[in-house]
Image 1: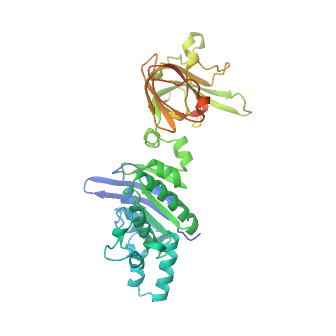
Image 2: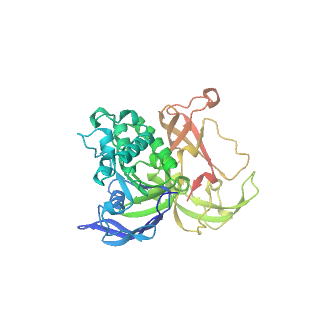
Image 3: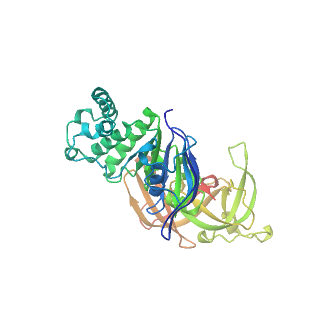
Length: 392
């Protein structure tokens, strides 16, 4: 690979009384497509600017391949930045915009010609090289900016919300082009975005940030399926999140599987669960509906936790599901408060019969005839999910 390893060592940054970054410490691997993800004001752009050399940390260091570059200006680092607003010279055509940095270095004319054509071909803009920026679409202008950044052959490409000014369809298309480009050139990409769908689509790993801190670093799968905090669970996609208490943790054999798993029984007030903590003789019929969740964290009895279940993992039916005696299936009855048709799926907001809690359920549209009777507003329905699909 041609990229650099980028190490962020205990970086902090203040702007007056505002704590923009608080002791950030992690390493981005060589050749990785790494994303800094979080809401506006979380510190992701400040961190990117510190990596680029446009800002300097109050504490900590930035290393490229074990070389401390903290005090170096941007032009002395092996990195280039693609900005949100393209930052193209309006009076220069595409060719001259991309060639600009090479001309500043005094590169010979033949080399400039070869390299500009190479990188414009890489971003599929060779046929547009003599047009001015105002003659191009937003996506084409952004590709010019990417070619201009790549022509210096950096080891790290920094992308500061490069797609935010584009419409949804163009964002999706250019995102795939960025991913393909990364695979072709093999350098380290550091991508800043507030859009979780963009981050999930292209990243090797994601750092989720909020209020100047990194809350979790992991693959898209890990971030989505195993969120470390309530903020991560709610920020990445949509979810149902409930305050809960651990009733008990025990070994449990899931039907159809050979392995023995640890299962947690949860007391979830929002779902109307009132289980006894100790005495099984006091158990009521309602206790059979306690929320069961596969335990990955080895929680303790009595511990306060947050329980999350993604809407697409919940099944919704008009008939009560036959669970064949399986205790690892959670079933609740409710009324459809609001159905929302979105084309490829329907979203249902189900008001539970016992508590009035609203639970979000997403139903993917596959084959119309296989979907069964259409579920409509005010229908009585049953929602159900497996213990393995919830997460603590």
